[in-house]
Image 1 (cartoon, rainbow, N blue to C red):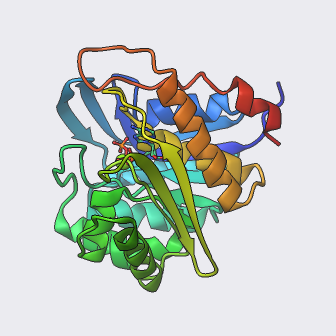
Image 2: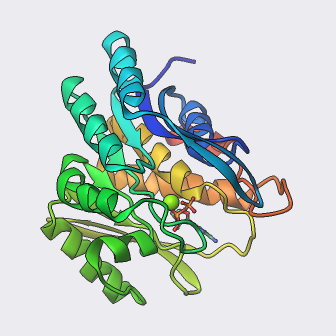
Image 3: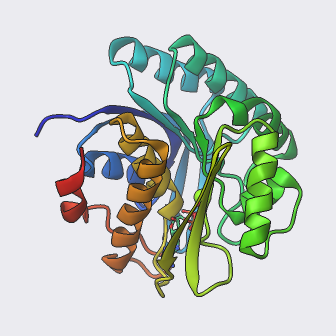
Length: 270
Ligand SMILES: Nc1ncnc2c1ncn2[C@@H]1O[C@H](COP(=O)(O)OP(=O)(O)OP(=O)(O)O)[C@@H](O)[C@H]1O
Ligand SMILES: [Mg+2]
């Protein structure tokens, strides 16, 4: 099979394989593209929780980005958790140096249980220096709340928060609806001239580990392959939905989804 695009992923490693870099590589590969990585942290975790986190030094993250891209130029970039001010700054610097394009930023900062994963200084830098640099940001509800200093309890609140993020400089915003209490899941794409609500039936499962990482990687892949952002979001959401539906039921806790599900989607891909 011919490689359709080359994606650079900047994110942390999840030893359990369901989220992080591992989920990103599986997603990009399944969708027919080539994955490269710059690892920002190494975690030991399983489906029941995180055991330890070892951050990688910002200089070494930059080395991975710059040395890799010097040889194989990425067509798109997916960025996951960047946990400190110095890491965010050096990642931006490196991305500018390699003239990165088609950047999808998943501003990971709140864990499933609501705990903040990055400090306030890093959140500030993310908000004021980084949002405007990405082509699309994909916060979940708690992350959109932190970035906009607002409470989100309804779809109206989601749209208000999305517009706030545009005012802060974001080019395009996809606020993911996995955390909103409702029968259907609504993911909302907001840009200057467009508002699209993607609606899906909420799947009743305990296994949704890595849905956010998987979605942003799928969107980055479709986008790098030449789809519009709207189409990339639509197809990415479909891919995650299929992956949740066919989840393999592994582990005792919040188990992984099935990244190998894309047979139907591949037929219409490109
Ligand atoms: N129970 C579910 N049924 C259907 N779709 C879901 C479900 N949970 C999440 N999704 C979808 O998964 C995608 C990721 O959304 P979510 O809000 O879970 O992101 P996240 O909180 O960043 O995930 P993560 O915990 O992996 O960081 C969205 O497209 C969302 O609609
Ligand atoms: Mg997330």
